Image 1 (cartoon, helix red, strand yellow):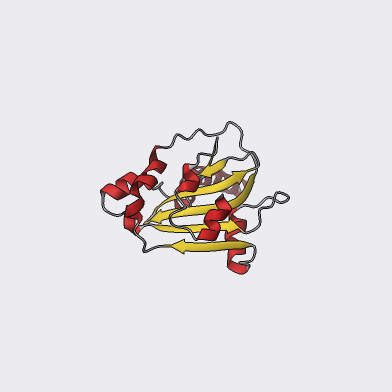
Image 2 (cartoon, rainbow, N blue to C red; image 1 turned 120 degrees about the horizontal axis):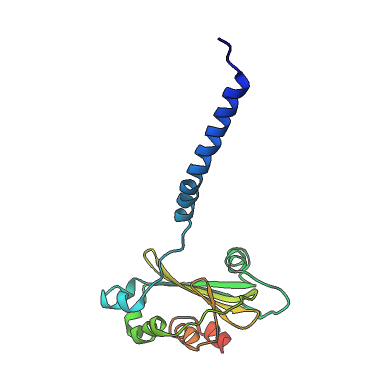
Length: 178
């Protein structure tokens, strides 16, 4: 009995390709879950659970307002590690966030309208409220003057996104915000 090795190898190759095609979605979905965004922080729920004082606020901002170069959030956070003359970083924790609960809870109710067409990010500041695995992020601004809220570019410049920082940040940054 003569076995044709070419046919056997072809069947093995076809079986391997089919197995790879069937496993690809499983492999890709497991990678996606590992890098999925963190749940969005709800300040009202945090307040009602008595955990508002467990917040951490981290703020990055460019000391000099520039319009000639595009900066990403990664640029801000990386430069803050190496050059505090360009980007300032401060972390606020162990403060009484409960005193400002009404202000923080306004972040849950502000109406956000995603833009139809995203513009280039021109990050001048970025802040993150964190509690456990949940976070609320704000980046100002895009080339069109919009905010990026939790990774989504939204229309308008609602003043609440500035006001919420004022009680917690150093005076020089509050003045920078205007």
